[in-house]
Image (cartoon, rainbow, N blue to C red; front, top):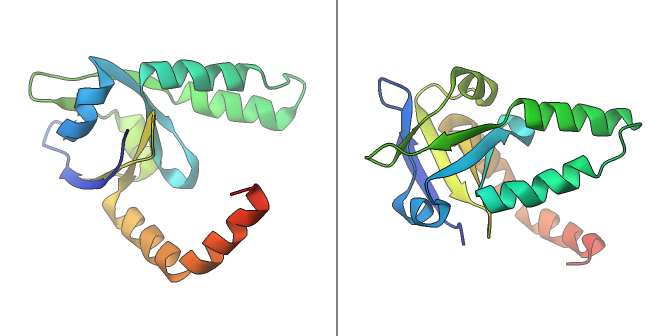
Length: 144
């Protein structure tokens, strides 16, 4: 399971160390794509296959489904680790997530984790912490 929050920095060649606890669960490669809130979402290969099936099941005649599919698949790349456990984070993904140097990596359960610009993550986390009780109260509507 991917859990916990980790702070890392890009090196001069735009490589990022993925936390060892995450690398052990990922195998030799995994997929990263653009996600909501100008973040990046990473999937195990198995998780990506499951998610891809759900996206591909969306109706082609629905314009929002087409937009979502194009955006997520168009921004996806499969990445591999180098010998030091680093990945190369593409310019396209860095630009989208507004990542310049500092990156926050945090787990989201069984098959995914996210990567955020540390500055953007800190602002988001501060706002979420301020409203956490209201957020939790709203989950009942979703069956939680």
